Amino acid sequence: MKVTPFLFKGGNTLAKQLHIFIAFFRSGLLGFGGGPTTIPLVHKEVVKTYEWMTDEEFSDVISIGNTLPGPIATKMAGYIGFRVGGWLGLINALVATVLPTVILLILLLGSLKQFSESDFVNGMTNGVIPIVAVMMGVLTWDFIKKSKASLGIKLASIIFIVSFIAIIVLNIHPGFVIAALLIIALALPVKGGNIS
Amino acid sequence: MTYFHLFLAFFFPNILAYGGGPAAIPLIEHEVVQKYGWMTKTEFSELFALANSLPGPIATKMAGYIGFEVAGVLGSIVALFATVAPSLALMLLLLNLLYKHRHSVRVKRLSSYVLPAIAILMLSLTFDFAKTSYELNNLIPTILLLAASYFALEKFKIHPAFVILAGLLIGGLFL
Image (cartoon, rainbow over all chains, first blue to last red):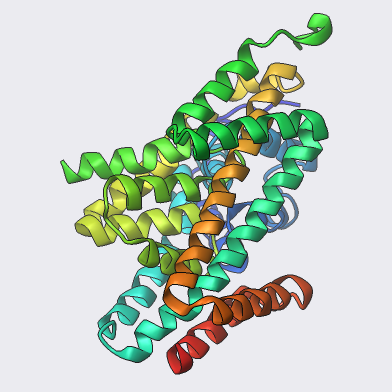
């Protein structure tokens, strides 16, 4: 199993770039609920439709992507685009993933804003906020479940409570709290000392 | 200066947030609403609602839009660059190293230790949104809308775009 860039170096044909664009455009436009939900769609394009990677390689990309911060969809698109079509492929895949929905959002919110003086549009905003609260609540629950699954209930609760005290009660900037957790994760000794 | 601030406002949330783009939302809110004051909490929640009901990655949609609102097309590009480039560069640079150490306990802990803190940030934003709704719509409509959208989204699995559309309509007519 190799995860080496430049695997397809030299093959920058127009058709390949077009395929990269189509693969990420489709998975970006069909995936609702944020980047992580587009993973299966990208998988279908990359492994099944275009056969750029094996199943195993793809899951390695995802698991490595998950050990790094930031949006997963663009890490995936950038890396796979790079592997398949070099630097042009990287930019191509990113543009296909990001741009269509950004433009859609700017147009949609821009046109809503034109009517922002009307009572109806003001009321519309009020009607959306409770829904947003529920959506955020659902996301919160997802992350609580993820914490429990990867840390176990005891450790997850400890970090949860400590973060609560630090961020909410003591009002420490969340960036510092996360940075501290990252340092602890790296510095804490490993039981048995088996570091890969 | 605005471009530099835009860069920072999206660089830090995305380089700190583990768990994909959604994890960065509360951190972005911290920068955009509380630190730089580019948007009000209400505007931010509106943006989140619409971004969440459109397809595609959420962090980049929000970055692209906020960048555009603050400083036009170039602002949009700066915000998107700050969102996408750092983590992608890390991925390309560290790929072989991370692949070699992918079973290392420390590498795994990096992503998992941060999750409960992200959950706290999301929880706090959830309460913020609920509180804003209470301030704008009073208690009874807020509770009714919270319950209705919970059942619509989670129990009946109605597509978020339709739930948002219904919310916009109800809001426009009654609130």
